[in-house]
Length: 266
Ligand code: NAD
Image (cartoon, rainbow, N blue to C red; front, side, top):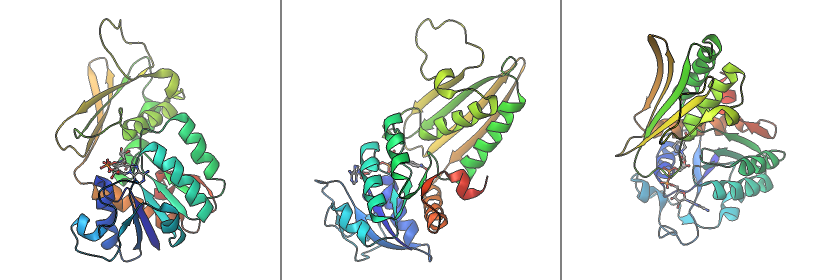
């Protein structure tokens, strides 16, 4: 399967280029960066530290998509929306790992998914998706009157959105377990005289610093006891491997908007 990496010079982009190189079922069909990036024209293999591979970074996504079977996209919300349109036009698989997307962006992905097979997830790792399934189960079993749910996450200092896509994915899992709407029940910031905690809410806390790849804990705090379900990502290659797995899974699927839970059969 020929895959194009968009955002190829980014942290995830370079990790994806290395992971494709190490996976026999796929090959690198193209590498795309934003218009004006100093890396346009460079050999993407050299940039990713695996040696020249003969694929130059381009700022023309349409030309790159025309020669590919799928796109791996860990970029930025506006870019992913644009790529969803192009991928639908080219009728190729679009794997989206970008986080921080708005409700309006999500509607555009759903519209593109009428013609394209899209797999989108705030976290592509098996571990986090399994964690989400466990969180849903725990939230269902532990009554809101007895257990408060708080989600704590930490990422590297360059991350631009908060809470992380993974924290929100875990919040959605908790909300499903409790049969509540996360949009109505989430508390994303606390500052000053907030008053006592409202029963049944899901709280988020965000830490940023250093080079942390991604730490998440879901805490169920009861009277006299605490249950904590945690995941620590030590290496970005885990997300890249998940994205490649998603592309291979999606290859022969009907158009639609799928998640990593579908890919992993959880
Ligand atoms: P990064 O800033 O290192 O890389 C993003 C790259 O995208 C940059 O090189 C940028 O130039 C490029 N880009 C932006 N707009 C573009 C456009 N229009 N066309 C082509 N390229 C464009 O960021 P990162 O750490 O690699 O993370 C990227 C995204 O992936 C973030 O939203 C992050 O939260 C998300 N992420 C998701 C997962 C997951 O498993 N779902 C894991 C890690 C990161």
